Length: 113
Length: 112
Figure 1 (cartoon, one colour):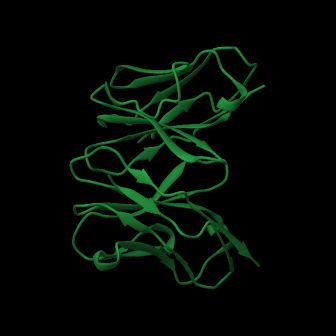
Figure 2 (tube, helix red, strand yellow):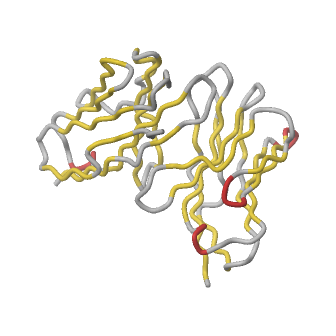
């Protein structure tokens, strides 16, 4: 069975500073990996996804993530955060032959001025 | 294109009442998912449908919960009778095979 661990429950970062959110997954085959963002009172919105190919993927809002098979990780990064990046971020893993995604518990990001 | 549409956005009801949440998935998507989100338990998958057929309902909490998908463009999640511990945000999402999930904006349920 697939599973996702997001080790950090809450991260506080200053506006303009860099951000990295950790995600580790457990899956026997090649995973499909996703990062979603949820702003308060909203649904989840896809930031980026990895299916195959280049292990560094670019997403919306200036985010990127790198798939590292040797570390079973798919960490999300942004070079310079904006106050609007304050939200909850979810990592998820799926598979080509399955409809289900397994979500991590989420990381809440607070941005201070 | 319209995204996943959920209704109602907010529902406040009293314990014991029946609650029905509705979802219209994105046209052409053949999978539909119901999730529940709470502070304590995070995002939980309740049930998912493929081509209108329930595939996995192992996440449905108990018999008070039921879900139907009578056609490709509509699904309901029903709670009868409702209890205060059912208070949560319920999300509907749809996808195609192996693809990303598209989420609705959620239905916030408060059971008094």
